[in-house]
Image (tube, rainbow, N blue to C red; front, side, top):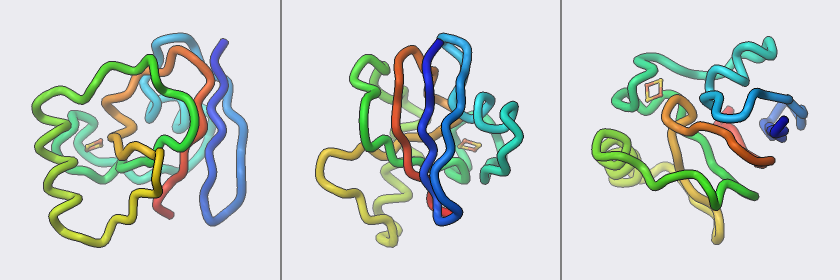
Amino acid sequence: MPRIILESKEGAHTIECSEGEALLDAILDAGHIYPHGCRAGSCGACRTLIIEGGDDIPAPGIIENITIEGLVKQGNIAIPPGAKLRLACRVNVTKDIKIKAFY
Ligand code: FES
């Protein structure tokens, strides 16, 4: 059962999820509030930094890529070295992962 370590300004939380579960669903199902909207990769509200793990997660699809490029072009997202910007609604968790929220 993969574990998600969620870091935010409110602290760090560990969440267990089902293998293959969408990252956003796992966070919400665990009772956490997390920014989201469309759940389809187009609004960008669920932007998330993957800071450890996630090497097994497939690359973003076309819609997620377009949304991420738009977020980066807006310019107010700092992506630390080694981290990946992804959308929590489009990432399925298969192994332990550490993420950082933008709240
Ligand atoms: S909820 Fe809209 S991009 Fe994830």
